[in-house]
Length: 121
Image (cartoon, rainbow, N blue to C red; front, side):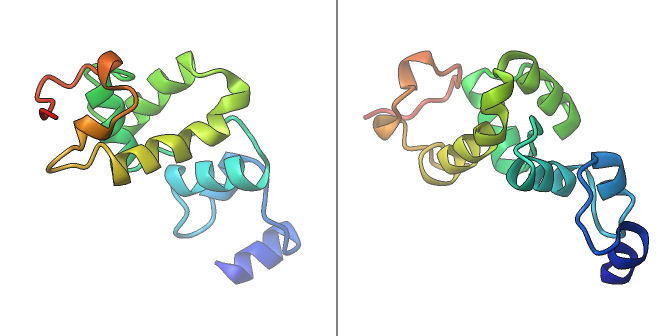
């Protein structure tokens, strides 16, 4: 990948997601991470945490793929907050809305959450 980055882009990390995804080993999620972190672009990477948390708390509805989740999320999140929303959702999924045993008693958005299997305090 490094050779292609040098030969095709003069050693600079490209700004466009299409250019990023043209590099070997770079998919949509990685391109979105680079775009949002490096260029502060309104790109939202959907990993397993974001996918799960968005569905649980009701930010995505019946999304079957990360791309469907991404499209639903960016429709409602203000553009200037999209680069940070990825991190908020990841951290919430890692530390509060844990996959196997969510810590609903510690959750600051419990009253707004759509997760039907909330755990008790």
